Image: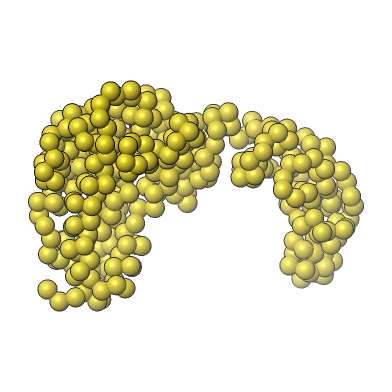
Length: 342
């Protein structure tokens, strides 16, 4: 088969079809079929000539790490990955030009899945004080199954008509479709069920307000605000009820940024008693002296003359007057001149 260097318009048009198909599979919140999941794992072990493992089902990745299994746990995840997935990927990649492979990898990638796995990995590492991706003896156990480029595999096979190993492709499809995440070891394989809830914002970032963005049947949850993982003490409370005083004790800069975003500068300048530095017409330059952020917070506050509603916008701490701050907001145009132009 000659090297594929360019896609036809018809092939281009099918990229989102395959991406969206596998995205739906990856983001499914349906319970796994345990019988089909177990059969998929056993078949995968058989193809790499390993003994059939004991299958243990878990409601979440957290539950799988909580298990006290008195067994010789030695990872097979790396072997499953290298012997099965990499073999198929290498076979397909040999038939594609580098530029085409790069474009397909980018456009068929399911970015939300990468974020889910990252968030889960960070939380599990924090809770267990270990890296869950290096949990067993040889340090190679990984959260498995949701990072894989199966949309790329299927596109290359059915759209580009690449040659492929049919047996391996069938096994990979069954693992991906019927398992949640798997921890594959020498004599035991833990299969984790899918989450019961996944929630995203309009930019496809994990997000929920006052409730988990990811939730499993055993109650294990992940709270997230526009892609930033939150501790439960913030995540379970709606942003409208977040308190400005939390900023005074929160040491994590990223969490402070999220709290500021959720609370809003208008509430912050009222509740933290911002100091007035200067006034010009309906504008006021404010400063918050508390150690709320990495650098001092300077705010330009505008009070609407008709509604008395307060708007607040952060400006650089180098501002010396309200008028200077207004010019900075309006791309260095003097406020009086800006009014004439408007």
